[in-house]
Image (cartoon, rainbow, N blue to C red; front, side, top):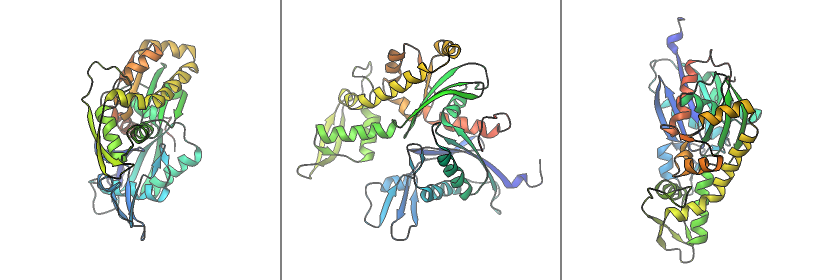
Length: 340
């Protein structure tokens, strides 16, 4: 151990479109929405995370809320840097006198470009990182659910996040083939908003649409344990008066169908491009679902019917990628696939 090692801190960041998770000392210490509220006139950030989410859709003309990440990558460099810096400040570092030297492992989508990678590294460095490593989301998800990614064995992981769905076949510490599509949780939320607008003539906000997805969202029109109908509140597009309508899970399943079909097509495409030897492994092992989107009712059953393969939803799928990123943080010497 070096003399100055006490001044170094290591953190793992799952920088997601919808939520950002930070692992420090093997614990999830930050789990916040990836959203920033800033003063338009001064450019000052007034809130991040949960506090900023509470302001979303309720601000006056001088304050705007924005999500610095879009489709899994940084869309607003300055806001993302301020958000990361703010989340890091939430950590209780062991050395409070001096600013610690930060080592970071940050998760990125598998389909990002070199420019997008550079944006993530730059944001991390501007937020205080002295050493930055990158890991692809499906690889982190595989590690997080307990797969030995270094084995000569094929495993398919499907990570359905907020901005992207990442599908990858992993073997020998690498991604053999992958498919990344920008159809995921945000797209499903937008589908619900469009459905409410065209079917019920009611405008709803992002938070209400997200609640509909959580309460009555479904990938199937027939469920063994259907959820109760849900009361939706919004603004009537004709009169402008606040209005309530009741929706069912079958109705929402219809609204989400096209997007789910796109996810199914991407999975079939990845399976088609998988080498035969690894296809045999996948046949025996099945498919693994992670990410918040994997919690959609009936999605595992629908994908299983489509692929004729067993499909397993990871335990605590929302944190699978973060867990894997945290494990990678402790094994940067072993996991040679990490990028810098």
